[in-house]
Amino acid sequence: MVAGGLVAAMRSITVEPIMLLDGACKEAMLIFIENVQMNKICSVSLGLSPEICANLTNHKEESVLVQREFSLFTFYNSIIMSVLPLIFVLFMGAWSDKYGRKFPLLMTLVGHAMYAGGYLLANWQTSWPVEVLYLVTLLEALGGANVGILSSTISYISDISSEKQRTSRIGTINSMWYLGAPIGTLTGALIIKYSGYDMALGLVLLAYVASIVYVIVFIEESHGPFAKKALQAQGSLKDVPTMDKKDVRAITMLTDFFNWRHVVESFKTAFKKREGDARSVLMAVIIGNMIRRMARGFFMYMFVRRALHWGATDYGYWISYRNLLVALGSLFLVPFLTRLLSFTDMSLVVLGTLSMIFEYLCYGLVIGPSQTFLMWLGPPAGIISNVMAIAFRSMSTKLVTKQEKGEHISPFFFLMAKLACSLTVTGTPSSVLLFEVIMQKRPDNYPYHSDFV
Image (cartoon, rainbow, N blue to C red; front, side, top):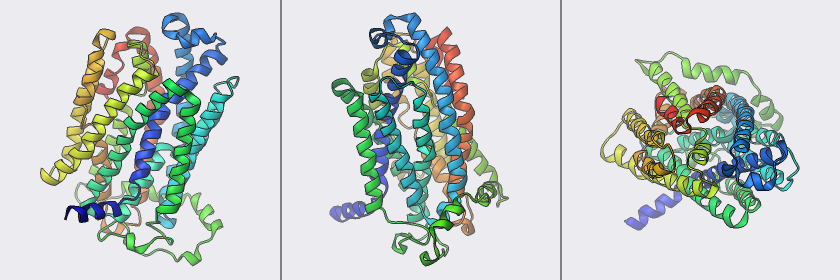
């Protein structure tokens, strides 16, 4: 009985390994890229000596200069990382409904690989200015970045799962993504400590290449003319006929990608009049997801670096611990709350919001090294903060009509992602400016911004 269930679970594995690996690489890259950026700003842009750049905490004036330049770089870099994924999701949703999910997923993973490879090359070339990294960010953004992989995998899971299974399946892939985070940060911190950034970035590049191979070889198309019909679960979001693959041409697929009607279709899907309060609930889901993205701190590493004098390794240990608790919380608590206690998606949103508030209150009380213990108390308080994101994504699959299933659900996913990108266009730059002002006054107050939002 148990063995049969285990075999069935193994057979149902699709994009989960990709999410685990991407979560690990994504979080590891957050540590790597900030240090590469700051090293280039310090040594190339400002021309400071290697001794000063390696010990900025002991050189207050130089540290302020580096952080100001870093904030300015982050401002422009965040715009690139927000605007181009916005263009990606504008067109890719309806395109993937017509031609399939694998290509958007592969496009995102190729962008990830070029991102890691670009930072590896830039780190090798110590004389290159930090502005070169704008081009590297451009390559990542063209693939849709995190928005691309989340939208593609959720659309894929929605194709192959019934409505009854969907919250659990979406919760699982999200949990795998979050579970990869502590693995990536802890491994990355150790590799940096003992082998340096070149080895760390090289391993991330290899991991993304392996992910691309996995998708090509093991992931079968779930939608469109190339879909395998056996993948379609009863009650899934793929329930309409598609064109025959013999009628598909490469040039048609390319021109369809830039079809502006796809953009109109996405907006019509989200804003059309629905039965009862469904449209209002959809708008609340979209706005809530946007606010959630803005509320998460963009500069936690910079905060602990300045307030607690932590380095990359110290931060790596802490963020690994934090992400592990949150990932395990969402992995086990979502099935428990939804299946055994019959929690609704809306209840999960409220529960996750409260958890996030208490977590960031702990961080906001940190005013110096003597309050370091609060950094370790925050993650247990936020152990179920990620269920909010899981509930938002699950709700978005259940608030469409039967006629829209398989026809417009993917544009809606991508519209949610697009609006989240739109907020990031303003949210990230505003957080950059907010961080700069607060850090000049009281560096301990920055986490309160997340609680306020």
